[in-house]
Image (cartoon, rainbow, N blue to C red; front, side):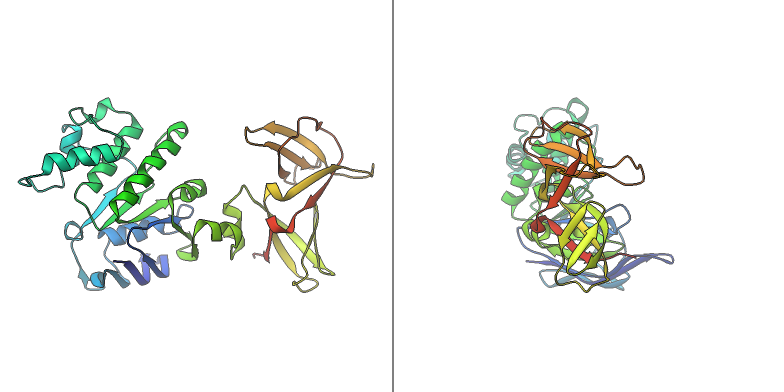
Length: 346
C-alpha cells in the first residue's frame, strides 16, 4: 500500500520550494527526508498531510488520489497521523485522554487500545498523569502514541526529536523506531540530522533546494553516494578542492588516485576521517603538523594543518593518538575507499 508522490512542484509566490519530486514510500517502511532548512522537506510532509493545497503533480495512497490540482481529500479524512516537533499535547487532558483523542468515543476497546499503545512506546502506567508532569522525551512519546492509536495507514513526523536533550535522544529514537515498525504503517520523517536518519530510516531521501539528490538505503548512501553533498553528510566528512594531473588528484593535504578523471579537471574530494593515516614526516620541510588531539571515546580526533588560519584543518580519526604531540610534522595518506571524487561545484 504505497504512498506515491508523482512530479510534485510547489512554490510560495515566486519562490520554488519543490521541483519535480517523484517518490514512493512503501508499506511498513520508515522513509526519512534529510536536508538542510529550506530544502523543501517539511513542505512535502505538509502536502502529504493535507495541510497545504497541492499545486502540481499528484499524491496517492494505494492508488487512491489524496491530492491533485483541484482535488484534495480533507486532512481529517486521509487516515494519516502526524507528530510535530512541539508535541502539541492538550494540557488539560490526561495522558490517556490525549492518546484517546483520535479514537471513536463509543469504540468498545478504546481503553484497551490506549493502554496497549502507551505500552508500545514505553509509557505503561502513565495514563492518569498530565503532560506537564512528564519529561520532554516522555511527552514526545505520548505524541507518538496519539498518532499510532487510531492505526493510521501513514504516520508523518516533523523533526520529532529536535527539542529533546542529546542524552535522551538516542533512546527515544530506539523506542520510536520499534513502535513504528510494529505498527506496520508507512512512516515519513523529516530531519536535518544525518545521524538521526541513519538511526531511524529504512531508506533516506536526501533533499537540496527542492529536489531529491538520492534516495537509497543507508548503506548505499554511505558507501556509494552520487553527489558530493550526499557524501559529505555521513561519517564526519570534509570536502576539498583538488586538481587532477596524470591520474592523481592533488590537494593541500596530499594526493589520491583519480585514474578515471581527465587531466586538468578540477574536482571536489570528499574525505572521511577514518580513511586518513598519519606518519611522522621524514622531511623537515613539511608544512603539515599536528594542531590538536582530542579523545572522543570511540576514537581520537586529530587535527592536521598549518599555521595558516585560512586553511581548514584536516580531521583524522585514529584508534590511538595518545603519543602524538602537537607540533609534530606529519604526512597524511588516504585510503581511496574513503575518498569520493566529484566534478567541482560552481
